[in-house]
Amino acid sequence: MGTARDEPDRNDPSIGTLGEDSLVAGVLDRYPSAPWLTVGPGDDAAVLDLTGPLAGPVVACTDTLVEGQDFRRDWSTARDIGIKVAAQNFADVAAMGGRPHTLLVSLTTPADVPASWANEMADGLVAECARAGAVVAGGDVSAGSEIVVTGTALGTLAGPRAVLRSQARAGDVVAVTEGSGRSAAGWALLRAFGGVAVGDLEPALSALVREHRAPVPPYEAGVEAALAGANAMIDTSDGLVRDAARIAHASGVVLDLDPTALAPTPDLLSAASALGISAQEAQDWVLTGGEDHALLACFPPSAPVPPSFRAIGVVRDGEPGVWVDGRPFSGEGGWRHWS
Image 1 (cartoon, rainbow, N blue to C red):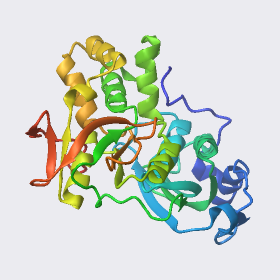
Image 2 (cartoon, one colour; image 1 turned 45 degrees about the horizontal axis):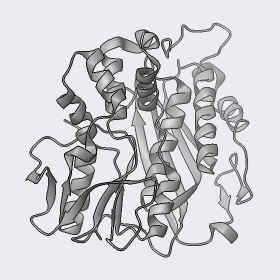
Image 3 (tube, helix red, strand yellow; image 1 turned 135 degrees about the horizontal axis):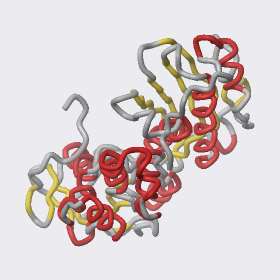
Image 4 (cartoon, rainbow, N blue to C red; image 1 turned 30 degrees about the vertical axis):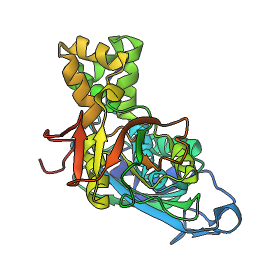
């Protein structure tokens, strides 16, 4: 992996030089259509035909990425950032038990950013939309002092009801999809080695960096959990313990997690070794690392836990919160804005 931010290309005009209309036209040419997109990008608004397989309650969410806060251009390509903004939004749809189908994207950018950057970001959006079974329906562009990308996703519930954070019950099995700690490990590797040197890492460690730059949420697992009868579910974008605590407080229960079920995987231990840190710190990535976009769900004892999930604990009555190894978790617990 080389550095994500390349030297300026004199043949590549800046966004300010190209102008809004030409920029938008170039980006829109990259977006495919879909049967439900009656009026697609390029008009004042999109028109969706949510009948047939898309009929049902609509799930809507939004998420924002800010340069310097959520990404760095010398660490992430424009394509990575497009993937990331789509993935963060679609993961929230999946966490409600929905299937994502449509994305709206707004871009704020300084004038000196190359136009090719916006085109490459659009390519990332298209790639992740294709993986999720969705399309970009439109958006907006504006000028600003830093790059800000906001996505708004729409989806349709797979089952008769949304899977909320507030319905976990004592006796439920707590389960999570794979991937906890991988993004945090990738971020630690980037901080230690930078965007250039990570290309010299062994493949397993380079994969951790890739997952931090461009996450791969398990969208279909959200549908599987909803259809299996999950009582509660959440996307672990802010860390496993922090988001488990959100379920606990919303439901008025304790989520008691088994640390042996959350032991760091071999690639996380390899990353810890490469960084000269302890296995306990690798365990902390699993418990508190954010931006994994795994799905954490609570299933009634009578419900089958789908194969994409693995059991990591149980729900108990008690003062709402998260326990690890039978004791209340006392650490920070995950990502916090403004900290």
